[in-house]
Structure formats: C-alpha cells, structure tokens
Length: 260
Image 1 (cartoon, rainbow, N blue to C red):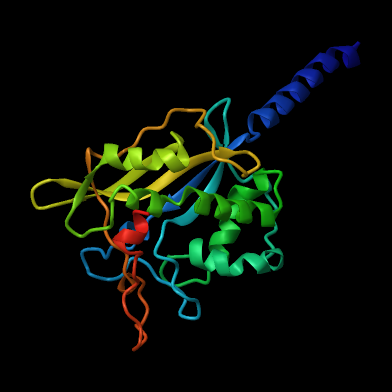
Image 2: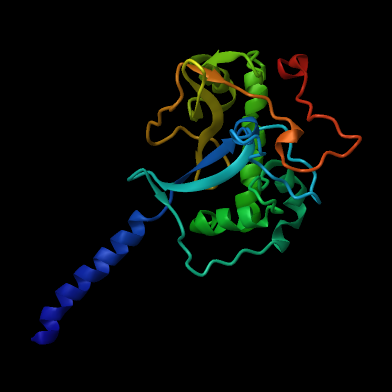
C-alpha cells in the first residue's frame, strides 16, 4: 500500500520536472548587433572605452555581433546556461577566425583576443541550441551580413555624424527592406548641455531556432530611444592601442557607396 501511495507523488514530481525542462527549451533566438561608434565612446576621463589585442587587426567599421541569445516563445524568457559543464573548443572554428576577429571581437579592456567572448556566448546560449559550434557562430555571422544594417541605414542617408541627429522613425523604416519588422533599435543615453541625448547602440533581430533566417519577433519589443537619435562615427583611436605610423582613421564606406 505504501508503494501505491508513493507512486502518484513520484509521477507528479517526474511530470513537474519534465514540464520544467520543456519550459526551458528555446525555439527562437535574438541576434544582438552593436555599433562600436557608441560603445567605444571615451568616458568623461577621455580614456578609451574599448581595447583590442595589438596582435589582431582592427574590427571592421560596421555593426558587430555582440551575442546571439536563446529564448522560449511560450514565455518570452531568456534560456541560458543549459550545460553546467560546458566545453568550448576553438579548433572547430579555425575557418571562421578571421571573420570572428573582424565582426565578433572582444572590445573589453584590458585587451583580449576574443576567445573569452566566444566561450561566454557558447556556454551561455550556444549550448542551449541543437547547433554545433561551427553552425552557431557561422550562422550568426551570416545573419549579420544578411541584415547589413550599416548599408541599410546608409541607403536612406543615415550616415555616422558627430553633429547630426536622425529620426528614430527614419532609422526603423530604413531597416524594414532588409530585416522586415523584426529589428528593435536600442540606444544608450548621455546628458548633453541642454538635454538628454540618445545614441544608437545596437540593433536586435529575431531569428529562427536553427539560425538560418530572420523571423518576426514572437513578442513585441519596443525601442528605448527617444524621437531623435545620434549616430556617432567609429574611429581607430577609440580602440586603446598605439597607432601604427602609417595608419589612418578607419574609413567608412563613402556616402555614394552606402546609398547604392
């Protein structure tokens, strides 16, 4: 009799555990692309906010991958750290290293070579997916290129500028032809002389669970930007490394090239 009474309790606990695991499963992702012209702005001390390993080339002057997060569309919640004993292997990524250094770099100070950033992304989100390391990182890079945020903005004459502000509505509309209505524009704020200024900091894009396509976001997400947004240029003196005597500033594509 004792065994028969214990059985329903055991079944209930087993079901609860199974439900909890199911609730924690991911079924879409969000690709987060940062604009280094904002994230690398020097602070009030004038010191660089970003650093790059001197043995590695500068990252590209473009929107860079910050991470690709896993989400559960049933709850809208982040799904993370699914494998407590996570293993990250750099060898499978050897063919992707040039692109990872260029488009998914470490910008933290003191300078790192990027492996810590990739390990953190893989062990926090990548191992919650059914993807291999190569597919997780490779497809994030492919989606970044497909979204082509910098060119999409440039095609509507939204060009990095130290002085000009742009309408948030114009920025969002510029992204629709490439990304659809999946993109969410995010800003950081700084206090200007007369008012608060919103600086374009990242674009977040919902993507399918297999990382192959851009999708509509299961949950509506709002921008935290104001109606007017600054889009600061990104220059190599923001990277906290000695300038090579022959090096010049990072050159963005010309206005003509970006509007084609």
